[in-house]
Amino acid sequence: MTRPDDRSWVERNTRLIFWALIGICLALLAAELFYEHHAHFEIDGLPGFYAVFGFIAFVFIVYAGKGLRRLIMRDEDYYDRR
Image 1 (cartoon, helix red, strand yellow):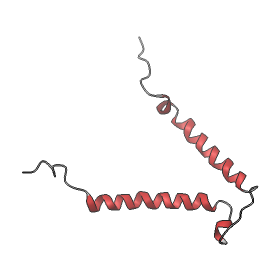
Image 2 (cartoon, rainbow, N blue to C red):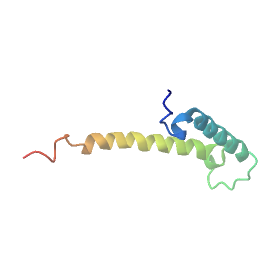
Image 3 (tube, one colour):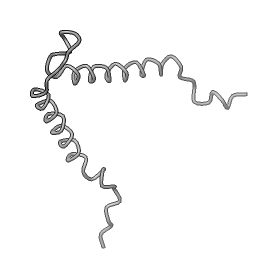
Image 4 (cartoon, one colour):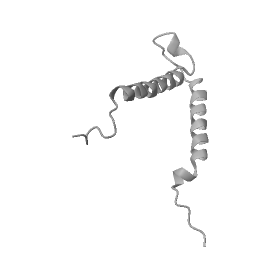
């Protein structure tokens, strides 16, 4: 007798979800080439600028969070000490 798979649909299809997101991002990047921009600065008129800027901002937030964790982290038994 075989056990049914206890994993959720998302856990079973992570590879499909990953490649679907990559495809959507590439399609949106390609669509940006046909969209007329009204750039305020020269740099934000470049194709893909907002995708790159968003990725860099996300990476910065993750690493800033790691740094904050070191700054404000307490010992595991911090509240249980007497």
